[in-house]
Image (cartoon, rainbow, N blue to C red; front, top):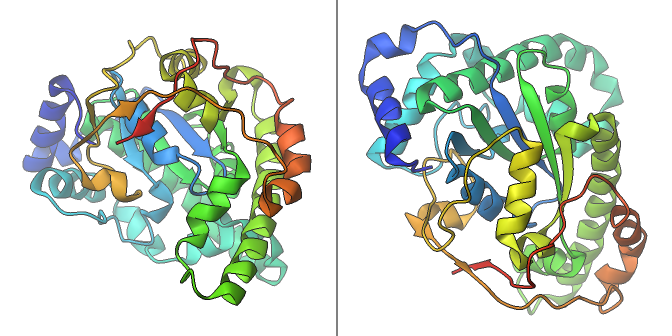
Length: 325
């Protein structure tokens, strides 16, 4: 994403200079803030907001790095140069380009591919090695101490937990299931009622699997390096929740201007990253009744379980809300 001026210069110099691409990587471990949970939960706006904090770079959904052979989903000279510079630092990644790593190691349904356990075992060491090198390359090119990865997948987070060369900070981002399911359902023709009903059931099953895996990964993470964030709390009191996230991520960065957030150089994300800037609009937070929809009813056990999970960020500031506009 577009960083403050102090971070733009190192990124562009590294992209334009071939000598920058062969510099030895920093000995300091990159700090990785991984946003885990279901899609359509607000991870992109959270990542954009974090990426506007000093020393933090928003990389977007890095699970797509190998699948796209290191190429960003959007163009633009600065973005293209940045990721080209990162790509040149990862010669070993060439062997992993494609969708195999995501299919066998990252996506939740990889858990059920038991017949391919030998291939998973063979792939895993190279995958972890390239993942570490990728974070180091991004940190060096961006001149950042923290990298935000909004890849969602809990199994990817589980793999990152095993990498000694990074310091992992985990955000478990959850949201009221009704808007999540509705958002995914918009991809289906509204007049195709049978398909929309099928999509609703499938999405709820996916949410159950995602939450179960995420809970397992979350509880394995040291408490001082994990935090549960409810999207509704984040948009209700963004300054307060953001401060709690930063404190849990070993960052003393000040809160950025929430009315002018640069979206930056993310390799992949939702439509927000197509704009140069977004702002946060404040509104009063209204509690959503859990049983107002089929999805609310189906997800009620998880709503209650996750409400008790700790440590969690709380909207301790006055009740206001923030939505991208």
